[in-house]
Length: 452
Image (cartoon, rainbow, N blue to C red):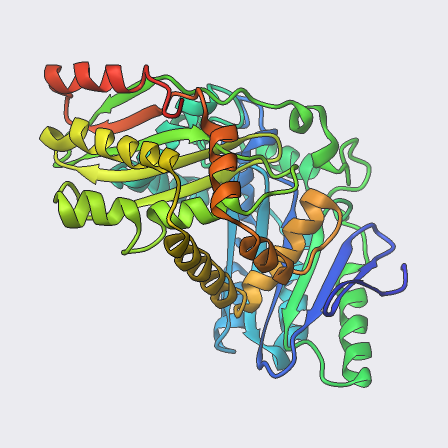
């Protein structure tokens, strides 16, 4: 085991266990809660067409029983302590985490290690969970915003591992065998390349710190006997050819899927920034300014002034090599083209510059939301793990607040023009059939560069 060392201010420490697992510790004084989680470079990006949905399926199976615990005992071990455990799978990262009182960290470590190293993938549990996932997929298709974003990413990124839905399709999951899924697990899960991240009330003395480290070593400094001998065991997936191959992000497209709904749900897409770059803060300020709050420009213009929608928001999806910025909105079918045109106009209005007072207000709001989110031990543990996975280093999150402060009206406008000049928006929509007049107007809108 490499000895623990401080790697970031104010107090993030790192050690690497003998099996290659990276451990990050951020002790936050004057707290009572803590989070411990595993972040792995595993996601739908690494799946073949046959394997579509496997990363998400494996996530489910790690909750379905080990050699020591029935699946009911996994959740009860944390529920009885008032803790919370969950997991999520994205296109590039899977995480499993437990948040609870810091005094119960040894139990959380034991449960998490048990799931990671000793999940059984029992045949009967596999068959049962397959049905659960199919129901989850059906539920997603009944929720317009969830279904829309699956369509959106496929439209923007193409029919490939990055563009396909994270959870796969009902047809693909239904024909998956236990052996195929277990083989995927064996080839993608291992301590090397993974990060065990802890944040919050971890220890209050040198003695309790030594005790915590002893628990970590006992529970996690071992091999995964399910995986040993597999050719892909422990391979850092972020170094694989699939991960190193950028996907083309497409604009200038209007893609509509007809579904019997009361509203037209749509996403308007523009280029975003990839995570491998040193991120300027201008786009984050812009995202907050245009659609991050109830007083944002899009919310005020589309909802308050024009009554075109109930809610509207902005987002920025970032992957290692790709980025997509977008606006999400749901409106009545007869207001669809008008809502898209209004959203585009609000973006175009930025070409004349941003008022210094409004910019300061947006910067203040963004910094405040970041500070609030970083009060969460889970958010801290996640931030540290993802920084290490994507960049190999951990920057103090407070440094980003300084970068937000440095945004000026001139830098804001320069970043906007550099990113979006000459780019035409793409629109992905879900809802009733588009009327001919609306379709004509929309086709004209997506042909024109949003900034000149």
